[in-house]
Amino acid sequence: MPDFLRIKCLGEAEEKKILEDIEARIAAKKKEGLLTDREVREIGEMRLHPLPDIQDVQSVYKDHLYTKEE
Image (tube, rainbow, N blue to C red; front, side, top):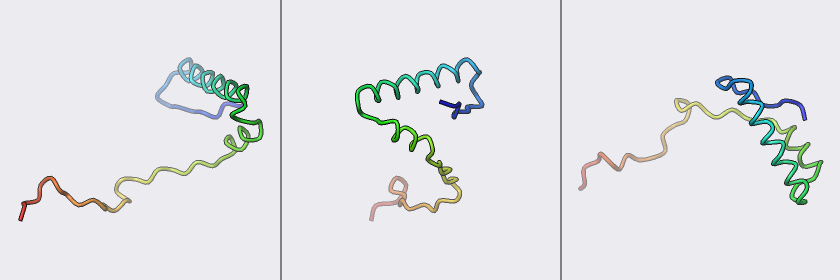
């Protein structure tokens, strides 16, 4: 499996450990029959969408903490 994970704040050893853990979990799920090679490939090919910036999201929640009761 090619390296698909880049975490800038981690060192190379920590990043490698995380990758090995992910690969071990995938192998275990394939062995248990929970995932097929095709499903693993499809997940690996999925395009990730960035999370919206908090300033781009309009507030949809009413402030209940600091409103005066009527």
